[in-house]
Image 1 (cartoon, rainbow, N blue to C red):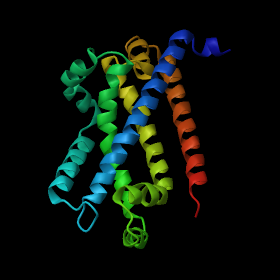
Image 2 (image 1 turned 90 degrees about the horizontal axis):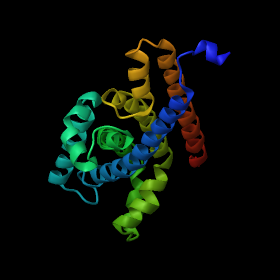
Image 3 (image 1 turned 135 degrees about the horizontal axis):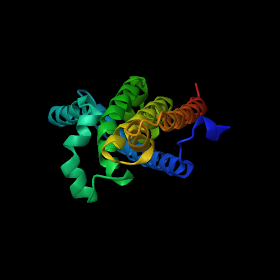
Length: 222
């Protein structure tokens, strides 16, 4: 039945492309979480009246975040080709897509982190400071626990965006379902291949959203 609906689909290739998409999404989400969290914390703590108040650092960090958040991803991939080639030795394959995926999504997540941290009751932070808590203690014991649901929700949205980014990266041969849909589907006029790749991408997105929502609910103790 399914073979008649998708006669041109090579299921082994489709499975391989799905695993490549999952690989790119998982790794880039992990590094995006780490880098975006660090950038967001720096933006928050270097703002006026905060623990690390520093106009220059705050402006530079904010400029970096705003610039890379504003560049359309497909253009960013092209701009980063020399850097990717230097770092990875190739611009093709799942690993070659990682630099652009991480650099393109970390600033986006950093803004979400900043928003989450700004929503924390200032009284909680002031209470920790008055008790002599160090900056690292405030970060690990106050900022991150208090903003945990928002941070999880933010990384869920970012991970879903990254699935779409992997599909766009497929246009330059990064691998995954995007490459398969473009090269084997669109360019060969095999609509069933493109449709199946789209269905699988949607399934991945729904799974990420479900897991993210479930973890967010569990993390919210209010």
